[in-house]
Length: 113
Length: 115
Image 1: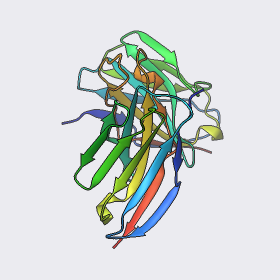
Image 2: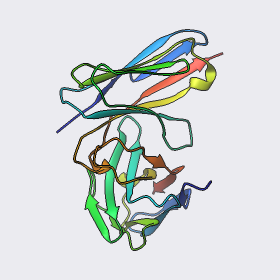
Image 3: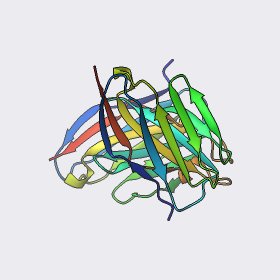
């Protein structure tokens, strides 16, 4: 059974600080997605990474897929209150439907003004 | 821009009652999913469908049934609700994608409480 462990589980920081959240597995995934979920809403896709070592940037957010495609990180620079939410990583595999997408339990981020 | 719409948004049931959650998508997606989200447990897949008339079990299917009679609709049924089914339920859809990289589009969730 493939599992994705996210850390930390909770993170509370002040506006302007930098942070990194992690998504780790002992299994190899063909792709890794990051979603953000705001209170009372469904998750929304931020990025998909598919190549080992790949780095993608989305404004102040930097996503990295590990060389071995077993782990990923999300780094936020100069966090803002609007970044508050639950960050979920999800691993996918070639040849499977999205029914094979494995979600981590999430990192709940709170950015205080 | 409706996307994925879930009804109802909130429901309170007594133990043993039955109910159906309806999910509708207007993006012509082949795949549809039902997840439940509980504190500290993340998103867990209940059932999913890869096309009209087909369904498959996910990680936590017990106590639930589903049907996909029309491509745009995916119904989740609870025949005899139990307190352990108190949760927030999310429907999602995605295009056909054998690479495992397709984006999931989620509804806003349905909060179910079973007393």
